[in-house]
Length: 434
Image 1 (cartoon, rainbow, N blue to C red):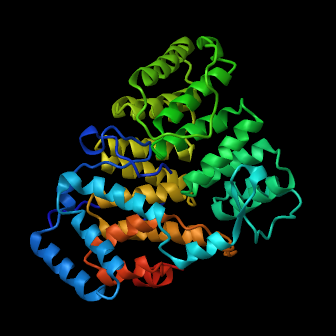
Image 2 (image 1 turned 45 degrees about the vertical axis):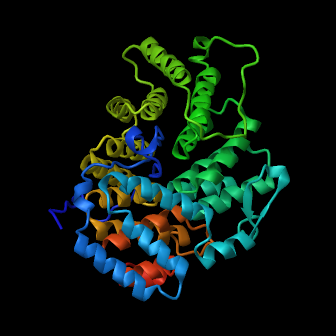
Image 3 (image 1 turned 30 degrees about the horizontal axis):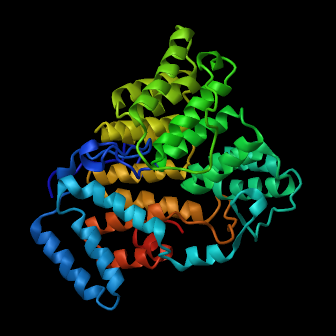
């Protein structure tokens, strides 16, 4: 294997926020983009030799012959590295396939333990929530969030909402925490509900724009960003009201955003920034960063996020977004530094840990990638206080990325363990704490 680069960034396996599912490279994905996507740079570092491919295919045939679907999964992961130009498209397809299927019994059990409430607009609540009657659940949730205990924060926020379904702030923090926990769909539903209760919640609008971007809903992201301007007392005068203008909707579309719409929203943000003069509004700069990311202007997005960080240097979500944008701009080593900084501030930031793992794959550091994915899965499975969260929601995206990293390491036995969802076996194999 040609010179592999380390992604340890002086701190070993640190942790990671923005989801790495969509690549904003027209020649690869036809204009798809996401703020958390990773770079396809230096793919020559991860391209295996033909001899290695033959060996892996032979292992896949012998070890997985009794499970045809598992064998196909292994071969698909192997085939993903046959062509540099197709590698990330196939990885995205792998992630999308993972999202459609239940690969592990733990996920199936989780589905049996949650229920849908029509009154709460489709959000799935844990039915075995030990904190459902906890006095001051919202305040306790904020405390746990500050500590980086995302799984328990989610339970406390759900408890607060069950006690008061009209608590818009609880819906806001639930949505933001679900996104940080690499559960974008739950985040979107929670944030939508927050905005139904409180349409002028600017934090929820910005978070929703990010979640829409991460899931490929560019049109909805632009709409949320425009609504942020319209609802902001400082900037709403910039928006010329249009009769019959559509409001926030639950029907999402993955169709590419119309360039004129994107440019129109971008102009609003640029005009607002111009009106501020030398004063930096970090929220406005964050919105600009998202818009530049959507249009593939990664250097301008990097400038916007860096500007926001001059005002909020301890904002771990901004560091994660900067990392994702650096990665999309083919600057993976710098992305590792940004993700590492995000994790220094918030060690429990699962999304940033996940993104760091993807950057490690980019740099050919497969073992470190696996270590980061396993750490993220372990964090999702239990709380930082060693309190077991009942039937936790384990991210399919992380499992899919883990399988690909294992396939690149010539580890078909562990690849099979990943398909079975045997996290304990994998943690032991890499000498990680359960």
